[in-house]
Length: 226
Image (cartoon, rainbow, N blue to C red):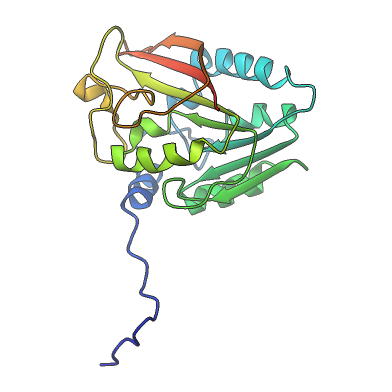
């Protein structure tokens, strides 16, 4: 058996989140569209969620004299992102699932569009004016959310969408990263609350849509960063 040289790089440990998200798509845990290879769930496809979201995001993006550079962190099957590309100077879409990103590269093309395979908790994020995280953090453990939150201060704007319980709830109960969310624990993410304590210049709710399954609401918030 060959001994490893001191200081040599060891093989990367498997990424549990990457494996979990690959499994979500392989096993169609968020549902399926028989006309598509990848499906990111009802939140990315049902008109009652998608149409008002695209409307408020388009309005925000068009409010700039110079179109912003947008980083879509956790872009999924890009059913939503494809509608926003045209309102940006550059649109950088990232996801942790390599096959999904390759599929998106082949399917969606525009001069100002880039796709990157990234683990947004572990990897460096692309530079941009505005970060979009649409129902992404709700699937991640507090430890991973914390690592992402530290990088969000590099953006001028952060647009966050989360599925949370309706009414009062205890925020930020921890979960294991994967298919599920904090709803089963009657909890949801609040980045301004402990343990994340994100400091922002301004917080503005852009949208609140009741879940069609009668559980919670889907809230989109615009944070203006310092």
